[in-house]
Each structure stands twice: as C-alpha cells, then as structure tokens.
Amino acid sequence: MKFLKKINIGKRVISINHPTYFIADIAANHDGNLKKAKDLIWLAKEAGADAAKFQHFIADKIVSDYGFKKLGKIAHQKKWRNSVFEIYDKYSLNRKWNNELIKTAKKAKIDFFTTPYDYEAVNEINKHVRLFKIGSGDITWLEFMKFVSKKGKPMLLATGASNINDVVRAIKVISKFNKKICIMQCNTNYTASLDNFKYINLNVLNFFKKRFPNILLGLSDHTPGHATVLGAITLGARIIEKHFTDENKKKGPDHLFSMNPKSWREMIERSREIELALGDGVKRIEKNEIYSSIVQRRCVRASKDLKKGELISLSNIEFLRPAPKNSLPPYDFNKVIGKKLKKNIKRGAVLYKKDII
Image (cartoon, rainbow, N blue to C red):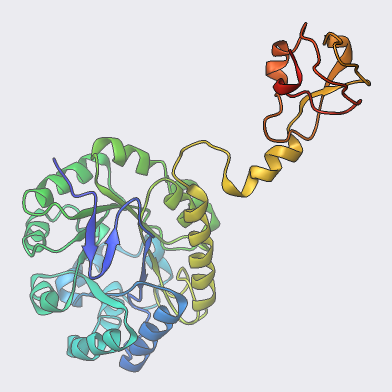
C-alpha cells in the first residue's frame, strides 16, 4: 500500500515537516442551538484552531433504540439520564444549519468539515468541505468508507476501540480509492478520568510508521489537558483533534472532556514550542550555544610560567576553561608533549600550535 506523505487542506500543507494541523471538534457541544454552534466556530478560531469540525448524524440512522434499551447503559453512557436514542436525537446537528455554519466558518477564516455518519450526510456536505473524518465506531463499515474515499478528499481515520486487524482492513479499503489518508491513534473512553492516560498508547504511532510507510499520523484525543498532544507530536503526529467547548461544566455528553478556549490556546502554544524543539535530528553545536562551547570547554594551558625553548610535558600543562578558537582540546594534548616553545608563555595562557616548534 502506498500513501501520500504530504497532503493539502486548502492552503495548508500537512506533512512531518510542516506545523501541526489542529481540529476543534465541536461535536454535540452546540447543545442544539445554532447561535451556540456559530459562536463556537469563532471561539475555536480565536483559540488557534485550524478547523472547526461537527458531527452529522441522525439518531435513527446511527443507533437502534430497541438495541440500546435491550443492552442497557454501559461505558460513559451510564451517566446519561435520558435513553441513548434520546440523547443522540437531542444533540444531532440540524442539517438546515449547514449553510449558516459554512458561511460562519468562511467569515472566521477557519476550515469547516465533519464526521458524517450516513450516506446522505456525505452527499449533502461534500461540496462544502476539504476533508472527511471516519469516526472510530465506523471502522468496520467498509462500504461506507469506500463511499467516502471515492470523493477523493483527504480522509482521517480514527482507530479507537480497534485492533490492528481492524485498522489494516480499513486502510486496505480506503487506499484502493484514496491515498490521502491520515491514520489517527485514538482511545474512545469519554469519562475524562486521569486513569485513561495509561490506555492512550501513543507508541502505536511508531507501529503505524513501520506498518504503513509514509502514511500521515494523527491523534484524536479525549484526555484532559494536552500532555498526550505533545507526546503525539513528538512521535510524528501532524493532525490533532480534540473536542472543543466554551464551558466544561455545562450539561451535555461532550462538554466534560472537551478543551475550552483557554486550555486550547495553551495547547497550541506548547505544541508550537515542541515543534521548534524537535529540530532536524542533526547533532551539531547550535548557533545559540557557540559562546557556551567556548566558556564551558577546557583547553591546554600552561600550569606555570614557561620559557622560550622549554620542553612541554604533562608536568607543565593543565586543562582549564575557557577554550577560545584554535585552542587545543584535552584530547589533543599529545600534539604538544615533547615540543619546544617558540616564546615565553605565562601561567594560565593557552598553548597554541603556532607557539611550538
């Protein structure tokens, strides 16, 4: 399988050598209110997000009311007061909002896209978006992934609650029609528990690098703060998605584990710092430490006053800081041992090659 190691999202280039692309997943945090949804787009832009993402689902096309009543509430849904179907119905995105949301995103100069959960959503939104995301829960719905991949737009594949067989199966299907893929490590526990950090398994990104050479890497994350984000960027992820809200204490399925404008801005700032800090991997004396190499390194110096013609030995040299340009480092001391001095040298002075015969 071959993949593009560089893709374009509008004017943004996504690759290991370019800045990380940040997606604010507004998801259900609009709380069924159009104004709230539009305000969140602006807040995401102000906080430094590159994209504002929504989720296009309709309750009866994503969940079985009968099925969940039969199953009972488990996982994060145990805390929901209403039935699973009622929650999905309440927080579904009104598709009549599409044009307003798209216009708002254009005004805010932020990318707009979505995670679609049915064929109609893909067709309705396709001409308005530059990319699509496949949610973790649909990693086994091969026909749907094939349908989305044929649109020819960059695809983000979330891999939460899946194993490597699931991932390989999905990638094979998508890559037959689309090489613009970002594979996103993800853990789909939505409780905001600190215990979740031990299940994020960021080192899977290293495995993805080897299993899918050149594929773009990403992280779709639901943990508090931005520790996992910094780790993912360090390991090569260049697309980051986290949920976004204006207030974490609000009621709703997504607010608790979302980032808010303040924490989002902090995440962006720290991420840009880690990007700078990663460098190019070439070990060298950097421009900002040239003077440090002079004041901190030792060189060969006279341990006492020396006369012209005197032989240099271990008894009359020592290794002390600083080490100015052209001075001899300690590992080269044998180059002066047994040699005669051309001139008088004071105690503590540097022994240069030009000073010896």
